[in-house]
Length: 118
Length: 107
Image (cartoon, rainbow over all chains, first blue to last red; front, side, top):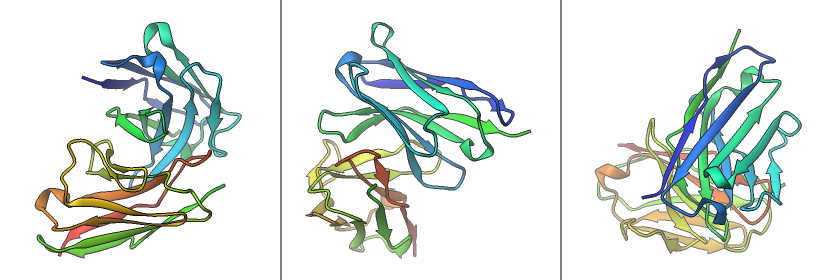
């Protein structure tokens, strides 16, 4: 069974940093591109970042480029999101999600809550 | 960047109704479109990929159509479990973009 389990979400002050993790199991992690998608309270889904299976291709939304860094450790079946210079508008549930080869997202984690507030 | 626009934002319907949600892309995305269903407090669930392909395990009352810039998600006979928010997403190019969502409410 495919499982994506996010962790690392906490309350952090504006300007602070946070590292989210996503532990993956039930599939060959190194064969899949992965994504981070977020959802602010009461709002819609917002794509944040994607990373290819071998980390060669990495993409970011304009809203996070230069502040967030996505990475993965295929040996440990893990996906990461390093979040720096956090702002109130980064407050959201952050989902880890798997890409199929064509690009559609077929599995999602349960999400981890990030709150940026003083 | 490609923008995705869904309509309507909210839809009130009754069990048994036929429901149609529209998604428009700001430029052609061929058939690289997915539809997701999300219930409160839960992660999204993939319903339709490549505009019209039904994801395994998804009831056949869900169908997708369209190509280029105009797409629709149809629920042929709305069931109690279908009251949720639906999102389209293009995966033709980066940055990926979601529509703003359509909430299907009980009439």
